[in-house]
Length: 126
Image (cartoon, helix red, strand yellow):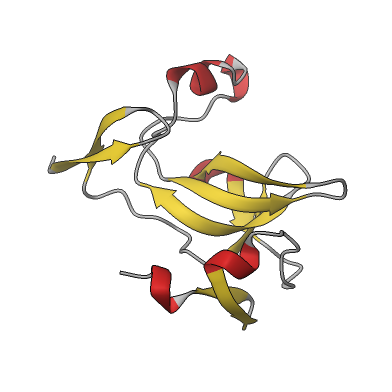
């Protein structure tokens, strides 16, 4: 299997990942969590788990996701607050609400909301 490496600041190390992992969602997509009541906008994607071991081990083993799948960084919201979430692909669904996300960081990263998704600020894209 063809593999690649990338540096994860969250994990504090280089991460080995298969080149063939395909992300189901893209930056700017609105998603919701499969199990918990929150939704968010994708602002970054890791091809495999790239957070700290401490974070991974804190997830109860019976619901702990596989490492070898895309993980998404979300500007997330629920009824009570806005926060940043890190979620495995297996735990995300397309958001059926279709409306914008009310997170205070959204205007810093995204330009506008149209057709159910955000467009990344031009100054932040590659």
